[in-house]
Image (cartoon, rainbow, N blue to C red; front, side, top):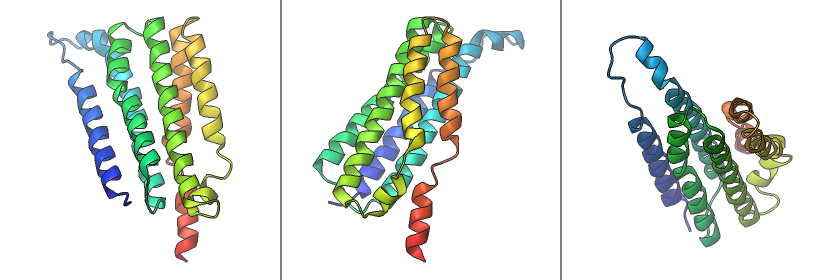
Length: 194
């Protein structure tokens, strides 16, 4: 079956997720600059989550650009990815509202970890569907960032109970690692086009 509806639905859900997150930000009631400091944790949580959602959108776009078609298991795996990502506004808000308390920061990490697992499942189901000689299979090859990311998430989840900012440093390290979109698919598709 075609991939167009999966891409359109996913784009819509990701747009709603970002919209929900920004609606959770509230302007201070006071006009002084110091009033912004009170909302700084919520804003920092929003920025980190916005970057993560943007990273997932970029990589989802690249992934489905290289795909030719989808099947039922891919549709369900993509729904699982969207479910995990749809929890990001909740975990972001809780983390910001509690000023990065240990348990909300750990739960945020669990959500990020599960989103990563879900993306891995979608990618590997697409690779299996398209075959070992497909552009997707060649592009993924050795996925170093995909191996390091879950390790950092687990380290972050565990360190949230030592100090939440250590956990956030692990989460931010993953975001920095993925901030530049994955060029492997572009390179493979560029080679195919020549």
